[in-house]
Image (cartoon, rainbow, N blue to C red; front, side, top):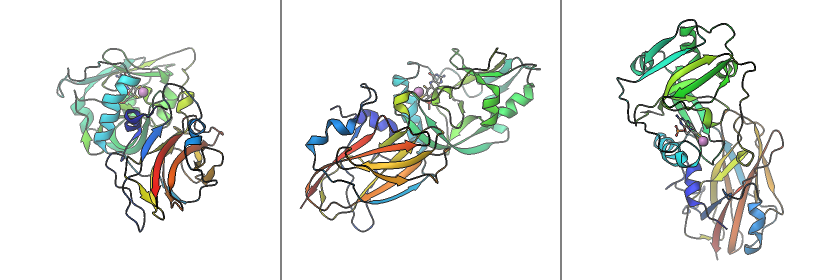
Length: 344
Ligand SMILES: Nc1nc2c(c(=O)[nH]1)N[C@H]1C(S)=C(S)[C@@H](COP(=O)(O)O)O[C@H]1N2
Ligand SMILES: [Mo]
């Protein structure tokens, strides 16, 4: 089995160095985290290794979830900036060729009046701050962040939509950018973002489009051109690749072993990029039985950040599996698991 430590970090948010501890007992961070295998596609990770572990049917534990847990800004930059680039974005992109003063965005194409606006001017405009998810549809990377920027609709209004314009493309200086329906971008209240948390983008003064419920390949960074155009049919907005539907991850990191009776506090996220997560499910018997926790009161705009507290009753080596079930019946093709030791 491949242990995807590196890839885990991509989905990892508060993960590294996170203190795990339940109410009562203080327990060191848990075990190895085994992610869904990146290269093999949607396979049952829980079935492959089931025989090696002590099994507990219908695992019982305490479950809660919140939706306002955020990824620290530095980790958003690290996860997506460096690591994702090698996975799914165009490699070798240079962010450092333009200074803050020289950074301009052109708004043009099928508009009434094309114009350019400097980054400084953008930053002086009415700032909007919003919590948004950024999830790659082609890799495990995901983050929830509070982002600050301007509304795309404001910038478009300043140019005036040309007759028949139905498509908008956010391009970087090399032409990266995927066309989207103008109405979709307006309805979703897309933002041109210059700050994540309390940190401005560094590395060449990036500006990045963030759009709720939309995979990150549409989040063009270092935007230099906002282009309106007329297509015969407005382009379709693509969702995540099949294996990155219903993303889940256990964020606990490597630890010493636990003792019988310890309360082990697991935590992680479940998210499906705009489709509601209806349940988060756990298995301690290699997927033979699943214990399902209802998350149908969640909203689909934010990730479901879950906590699962488990108290082992016997010594052994265990593997906890987690998966999510979404509103359209999708079950995580790539679950997440973690192996942990329990001593007398
Ligand atoms: N200019 C540009 N923007 C891009 C890409 C790219 O290759 N070039 N890749 C996209 C993809 S696939 C992802 S996952 C996100 C990563 O977000 P980041 O800017 O935080 O690294 O950027 C998106 N924006
Ligand atoms: Mo991506």
